[in-house]
Length: 230
Image (cartoon, rainbow, N blue to C red; front, top):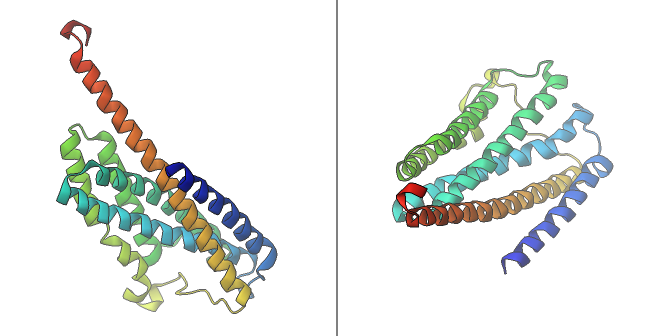
């Protein structure tokens, strides 16, 4: 069943990615004001929404772990956080590439960009806590609390344009998709990025599950060895 699901997801990722790339570079018209660089929109925005989705999964899985103490929720939170950080990094890379021709600068400390960078930093810290924690149980609990608290910044990033005065904003509130081809290309990009995320999440979860099982078996085997051979 799992292999069949992985195969279906892999097929969906391949087809949707090829379709999205074809539409972005061959079908969608060039935007009148921003020009060719506006095509980054079709990768930048879906990656940002995917990062939000990943951190929402961290939020839910962390609550579930604290409530049930079931390790599978902790595993899911860790895997989702890793992917969320990866997609946030994509956003932070594609954003300046988009901004340079439009604003004349790679980076401006305006609310949307700054809050996105803070969110990326918070979840990077989350992963560092997990990587360098010395006591497994305490590390998982502390990481779960951090994963819950960190999600507070996600809606702040999303609504930062509305929360701060317009004169403080350089990031566009929305990109006008006047041509129907732009709308359908956006939908194709969302399907491609979302399916890619769930494919990676499913595989990363299985790898993490196997790694923890292997570590548990190793500890059990070491416990059976005589003291002089440990």
